[in-house]
Image (cartoon, rainbow, N blue to C red; front, side):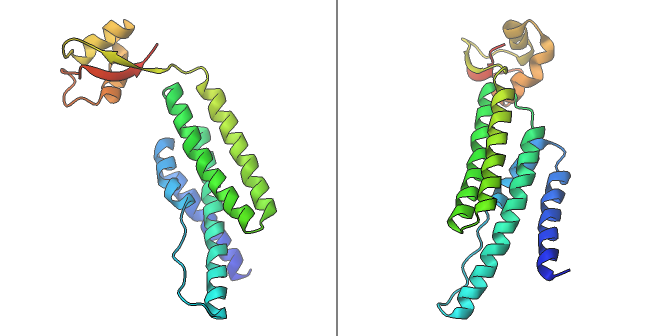
Length: 187
């Protein structure tokens, strides 16, 4: 096996390890995003040696980014958005990264890679749009006085088990004093 094959396998192993290290798909997405957009600094110089080094570096970086893009798409398939807006934001972020890498592949003349990334991007976009379509919207809740989160859960949903999501969404300094304005799910 050639050293290039070893590098390809190592790139896939790195992406898989990052994906596997995250217990939450949102963490996996956060960890993989920088790797999907990583562009190494150019080797200085204008001679043929510098051009050869930069071409090899570009090929290795492209391979690493592509394996990270596959892992990112896998993480997005496991991700459970909490709201319609969350699904749209995740879709825009992931599809933007996949689209950027597809554009880099097209610019480098890698037509098969470009097509594969565009197909992957379309599948991710459809998946997140479909799953997000039936989710509740985030709406801005306004109150006259700071309310305890448990009381606000009952006021909004008549369900105190939804209190943790209100606390997570409002991010108050203390759950007994929610801010006067905060986002919450519409239903």
